[in-house]
Length: 461
Image (cartoon, rainbow, N blue to C red):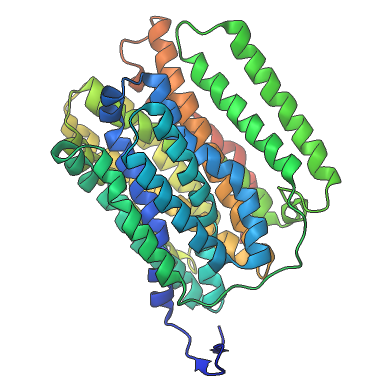
């Protein structure tokens, strides 16, 4: 990064990489705190607002669903106006959504607030690493800064379950949203200290592609969630899957025709992008789907309090801050493919072990939970580092949007599918508690993800 001139002609000294990482991490920490505190508070919200499992699935999945739908627009806007401007707008929108959520009298208004927060998340997540890359030169300094971004951002990940669980028990679930708004606004102010990123030539938004993508993902989520409800109509569910498939076909055809598509086909020519996207979808579905399931198992299945659940989820998150610096250190010595494949297989083993001890002593789950967090952190770190290195310049924002899009789609599908698998196993009389079935299925599926993406991952440099 080179020193730049301010509007008064003075030369602005570039900020230290750790300072840049810390500023970007404020936004990331807000998103992580929200997600992990919600996981702990969901059962309490369900009781207070009289929401069943399907309602809780929508509550957990709606924000990443909206984020996934809006991410393409975020990438286009960042290319046009700069990652800093879009990130700051996203933090303001996120703070507004958190405020609405805190005063929501019913599930409908809370879901509307999550829509606003999802729009904010779409503007924030891909632009954190993009803004960092625009303010830190390429090379080892940038790799260390990305590790620092993830490590500092994980403060929100660690505080979410512990502070969130304590707040839920002491003051109620609404306070977890109240706490987010001022921090998000402070992050928007701090981001003004960073340089704006490079901009591309303006183009038209692919509104048709965005609408088709949102409808396809929303319809698929509805069909998956309805599958787990015992009284769901098979005809309606199958129709939902069929409509979703048709919308995907229409989306692909639309993207081949438009000038500025939601999913930039040119990005798929980059081997790292083409390799990472399917793997990212697969392991994010398992990671986020099982986090939802584990919280339900602890509080509804085991009768554990929100604060104790928060402590157990903390164990599951402890490895994530370590993963960023660890990956930056190991990167020159260990191939990314080796780290990713090993992490997926070890994570799958941890999920299967969690299923095996689901009815045993709670303490036996601590080891698998710790491994769960470390492996998830390694996967998130490696895919971010690889994508940032693979794409430079104005297309970097779209590349990170594509990566974040796959993460969010994976989250939505994982939450919708795994909880429904558990519910379906109860309906069919296979199990008395669906969480164990969901953990078993997730472990097996993650092994299949590793095996199916392994050949292409090995070609990563």
